[in-house]
Image (cartoon, rainbow, N blue to C red; front, side, top):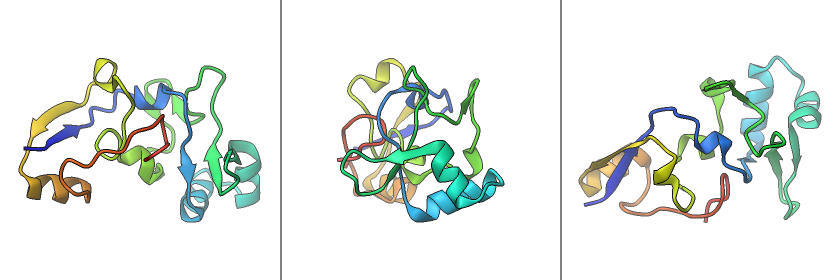
Length: 131
């Protein structure tokens, strides 16, 4: 049976260094949420991905997400899909040691319903680097 991890919003994934890739729709949505023009949002909060194929959120000096505010996400209502998918859609090696997500054995159908993913499919890589 596949394992579904129920997020407890502990923010461990927000503190893990890596890339949070953004789609154009997510850039627009976050900019609007932050009451910024898209250009201003892009200049202030993003950088070009190393592969030069899009944007990623910038990080703080310690690798934490720029939108981590204490113990909460400053853009929770509009956070990128990639963030919403942790730890089921992607995770990092040893995430279980720092993440407080609660593991539940579920049926293949339940896993697919909750995640939109094929049962048992997990993508690796650092924060924000699916597959």
